[in-house]
Length: 214
Image (cartoon, rainbow, N blue to C red):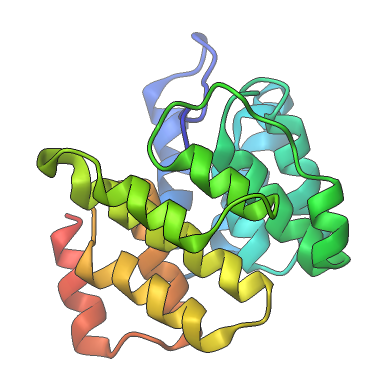
């Protein structure tokens, strides 16, 4: 995602760490319900922070609370309107809540996310692009940033395939994101957690990937 969770100046570092960071740790450990509970506790005290909390939206998706996840991403677009990832996660929630056709119809528009391959990812989800175009865009990134681009490319290709019900191709892409192109940032960790939750990573491999992210 583009923006981190926003915290008001009056909040102390201790407050942030005691709920936000604990929630992140629980999510990365695959404890989805626990992470949502921690973030919900935070938002009960600081409801003004709700629109910024895209991490909670992702956790809600994995908790299969798709209507709440959809609402979270619809809220986030008001404070971060140019984020393809927000549109994609919204799509995923709507697809599971209703169906893929409804998700395409409700796809949140974005026209200024310049990160590669986000334009191609959005086109794919809108049924205006192809898997090949997403991969080609990522492969064309200069070598120093190509691994990161491929991590994102395979993450969103895998999520797209899973939304369509194509389990094997979803697994192939997401394992590539989590292992072959593993990255230590938040979305790289999302790829790992996804694969662990689906039982796609052997325990040994999952531990090795987690160490890479330390």
